[in-house]
Length: 331
Image (cartoon, rainbow, N blue to C red; front, side, top):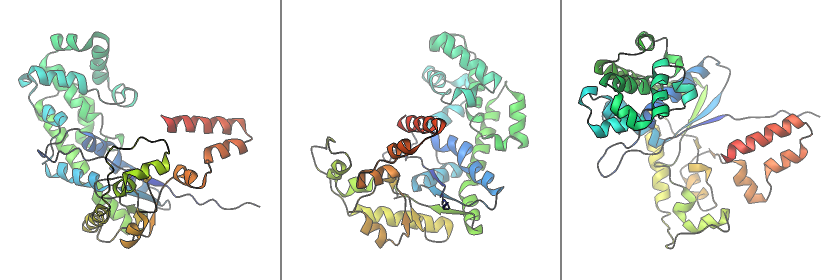
């Protein structure tokens, strides 16, 4: 007898906090770049299929950083260099561009763009020293432009400005790079409002995560680590700060309420880590559901689901697919 299979698709949108508490500066660009490539286009694509319902987890640390970029108050090292006139770059800045402005998957983000691919090939074949000796200001300007352009999702390529830059291909100026940055901020500004709109329409549910993404069981007690991994080496000084758990949960709810006009129903515990000690705190904050994964459940009840599936899988192609999936998860 057949039975229906109920599948809940949950997208976890997470970036850690790259903003330093000591000086307020951003260390890495991944909120800005992934914001132009991933977070808006996914729900815009979903909008085309109104009968399809999904859950999206927007982590508070991600939303705070998106809003900083939209406000123009976030400047990571990549952005600061990209907004500098190429002829004014000092030696250290030129080194940084050569070393880091190919930080992208070359098959999908570099190879499709001839000028970007040309510069990448030079860096790969001849090395950093050759580039520093032979590249002219225009080479640096084009590379800085392409590192920002390539991360913009193809869904937005029909935008007149973006399509114009893609067609231009090379010869980018500081003004071009400034306008590309403005376009990034424009895309970022749509992310949270679009999620709110689709939640209000009933197509998605937006969930949240403890405020700065702490591992709640370890925040309660670092010795809990040995419950999951019995031979885990624990810190010499045991750490217990359970009173911070309701603070993280309450702050996450407050942020959520300010942006979505309601309380969150669901919680994605950081890294899907759960323990009996944290569940009463989550319940006290009136979350209606949380999610974890099958590995956590497996360790809890001593059942390991990948192995069980492999043993029951009679079809060789299915077995291969599961092995591949297991290898992917391991990497």
